[in-house]
Length: 131
Image (cartoon, rainbow, N blue to C red; front, side, top):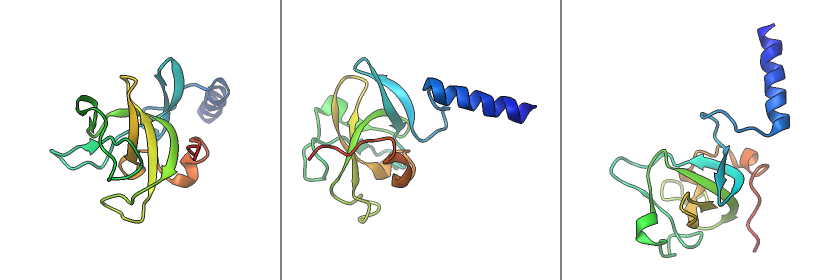
């Protein structure tokens, strides 16, 4: 009976488009008055931060200093993905996300440092950025 109730609840949640559980890699959050896919920052060394950049690469400047540093657990909206420089921790991982911050600022970070899961999964939920 419990399995049936759980399955039914999951089906209703999927149909209604409710937010995923807090431990899900991608969940929904509100940014600029719209509900969009969101995730959290992860994998940043203690005492360090993830720098939000103006483009998909390390050669781009950071956004305004007051908003440019993200720490583990910070939530970001996911606008779209594109290819750019490889991650510092994995030079072959070239996926960058255009992110939206709670303060209506936006920029790019390498997806390696986001809790999005596998590209095979998130590519079904996040659109590719226009060229």
